[in-house]
Length: 82
Image (cartoon, rainbow, N blue to C red; front, side, top):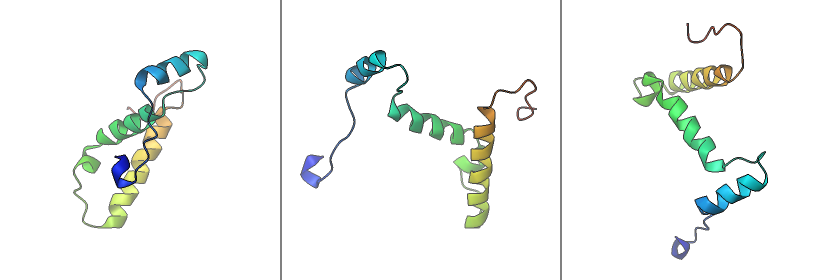
């Protein structure tokens, strides 16, 4: 990786776990991306791009992001899941 000019910024999982034990407010950065991708993969229309127009595809991505964000909000009645 370093031969091609890339600088790795990932840390060993053990070091990351130990750092999190020291400060529980910090979370692993790599999991944020993995959770985001798995959230978008739940939307079948986005997983395989059926839309011809780019603006329709981008609009669906924005809608999916809004739904994912709303699912994180604690509500007494969950209107998103039906």
